[in-house]
Image 1 (tube, rainbow, N blue to C red):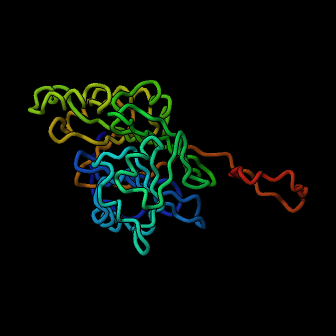
Image 2 (tube, rainbow, N blue to C red):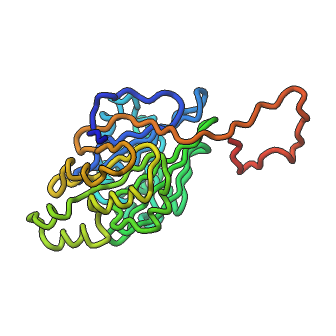
Length: 308
């Protein structure tokens, strides 16, 4: 079953768990949002994945979904092409408005400096990324133009479950590194950019066709479908970055018809619903009873450890 982007469910997600929404995806701008809360008493964490829309449009779309701009904790960039990093973000982070940390792969820091992003709170990451104790990601750098693109496997914990989100766009080729990084995630968001036949017949210049199809550009519908079958998402597949000129929702859907899970298509103009990522149950440690022996200081987790 394939579903299209829709704003039928704009309300903010419930208090506990991991939730994902694609605000927009395409050559005119890409932005998705993660909301995570470990429990009813824990703070809500809000993370943007890419910020290719203007700050004004992003703020409006978030507000329609019950999220204020000052609630966004982090903006995590896959890379800094203009459809993933709108120029307006260089001056948008300021007191009284957006307060988010900008998270940029270390390989992209030179470009971030040239774009003026380093005037804002900006932190580089390498092969891992930590948002807080309950939300982190493994990172893989994939081929895309000269500097590459970051793909993510996010892991989010509550008191009783762990949910995994795979996020990959503009990855050029879906090789063993990407498959291994994302294998068995609960929700996979991956690009399905173009139909090879439509690409070949388009009036795009030859250099652009070579860039897109040459292994450092984008995934075709067929490449995306093969990668998705190898990754085997457990709950849902969300297709990103469909080309307006060289793809159609119908062509993308046909290629992913045997994906083995529900398939949703993102859109350039209409956000998707919120998708709850249920994940897998974790073993819950029983609460100590009054008769339990008192542990010594040396039995406690270290300061750097996470006591889930």
